[in-house]
Length: 636
Image 1 (spheres, rainbow, N blue to C red):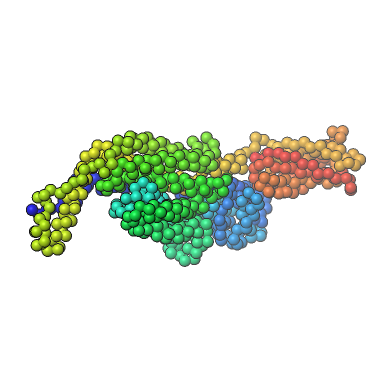
Image 2 (image 1 turned 60 degrees about the vertical axis):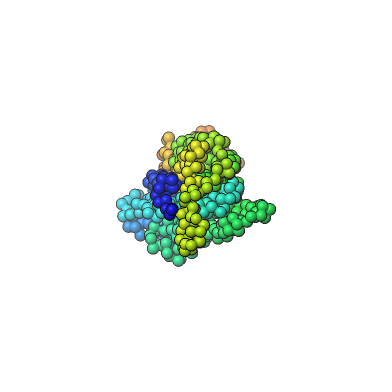
């Protein structure tokens, strides 16, 4: 009897493709929905102040415009542009000057001298220390506000088609890393015999290909993603060279080099290791592969840690190794989960021992994830209000909820694992006598026909084994629960990808606080009273100062000097200076005019930024008797 191989679409082997299609569809749906609401990538750095301030009206043209940021940034030619009312460049066009001092990050550009009155637009664009592009614009006026013809791009840097494509590549990179590291760890640590299984080999190789391709795409898209957003810039060699000189570019190149080492690891794992029969030699090779693989995996994980959120902000020296541990734990858990799913659906040999070993690995990974995740959450959020009131905090809540759901489903998987029988206990399937070709007949047939009969018999044997395996209710229950875990893991990975490109809640709240402090109007005029004593004859008295309206912008300043008897007192010289020490602004000198005995006044006194200002008053009562007094006051 001639045996007929079953059709590939027959029900016994259709289920794996159905499971894979379900997970793939879930990937597309969830990540598409997240990208649709994500908008341009927010970043760690934020503009916290400027001089002149947004909306300020200054009496005379400033010599330069300075911008202050919450974190370190990378700037280049044209990163800060000042445009006059007719949209012409009002700055000199030179590269922004780094005016940073200590923890204060400040950059400035010089302006052309003799600028006319009107409204000027400051447009800026930079790259945050955690690799994400940032941009913005604000206006200030010289003399008085005016009409302006400046038209700024409606789309923020990092948005549009290139922003979407870059986000997809980021997701693919995370997914590829998870499959590569998690799949290899599953084979080495849980199921060594899986090294010779084709489905497991394909899974790990596909992870390597996905991560490599995504890294190359990110390297090409980096210039248009952080720059003009033009497709041609992806192949601009000068732009690519500029990318390679940045920290994110160096991280991507380092990742490609490490992936070369990973390719060698894969070749040994599925070549020499899979064919090794001697138990002692295989044990030694397992140890060597485990150490080498761990070093390469940690190195690849470090390419994210060194260029994204962990590399900037508070406690960066602790955050980067913690981030590496977090990524490795994610890969071991979720990548191992996908490997288990593939093994349960596509291979006949995996048994209960391998599943139970993975269960222990997953438990350890969850413990590491919990510890590192709590630290990262504190570092990036910092307060309950940031947790509930920022996009980063809300995504973090969603991520925690998905992890909780994943753990709940995993609990059911552990119950099935406890009752799972080993593959060794499944009776072997002998081919039916009527379906096995007769030895004499086999000798008479052509070699091609004999090979065809052997292939058909192998398919029949594998199909029968699979039927017996699928009939095991414990194995079927485990497959369903693992499939549910994998589906949740897909959503979890998508949320994590968007989370890594979202401005941390701590930074967002700090930026909002700085913006509110800079723009909040004062409750009323500022009134000060300061006693003085120059040490000479009739050198004692009191200085009273009024600053009206006591907020950013133009103010009226009045100074009264009273003698020790409380009557108005004329002095030969009176000077005032304002200093905002927190932002290193000033001293800004004010020379008031005498209006009457003991009364001086100055109009148009510009307060460029809200904050705790120090008011210095110099009083001279004779040719040699002089004193300077000061007092701090909150303005704006």
